Length: 112
Length: 114
Image (tube, rainbow over all chains, first blue to last red; front, side, top):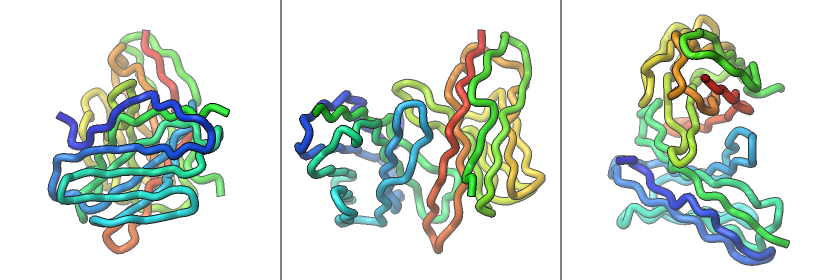
């Protein structure tokens, strides 16, 4: 069983709506949590990076981590067609280089 | 900076053939990794390196070999290609900031084994 689970979607939303993406994880030792965005036929690019529990905001993007329920969320406000991509969550334990665990990715489609 | 570059972009192999996927980075990052991405499976770690001369296995290492003779280059060798190795391969490099790492990915190599 994968240590990070993610609904593959696709998730279709109208332009301007809030996109809500979620992941769950099973490894209690995970301390760092990331969201990557991957456009079609491109490599993933780091979008958000959080440590432990709490919220982090960057422009239209908000990442949340709830360690008590092992839940990771990404919210995209005022979604744009350019936000159409696959979003992958990932995590790893502290000082455990090489142990990145990725979710399968959720495809998001923002329709004009 | 070119970042992380990968060659070739596309490759078709016959079962049993061998080949090397090239990866280079110009950011002087210590850490480099190879992943494969398959539908519904996400990114799975094949091999990784924490510095020149040091490599280790990831989650799915069978059928692949790596070496790291320089900081910049991290080639991935397919020893005897099998249809199960049909996938998109991504190379990534990373630097360490205290206990955190940020990975930068290359554009990928699409490999088909017939």
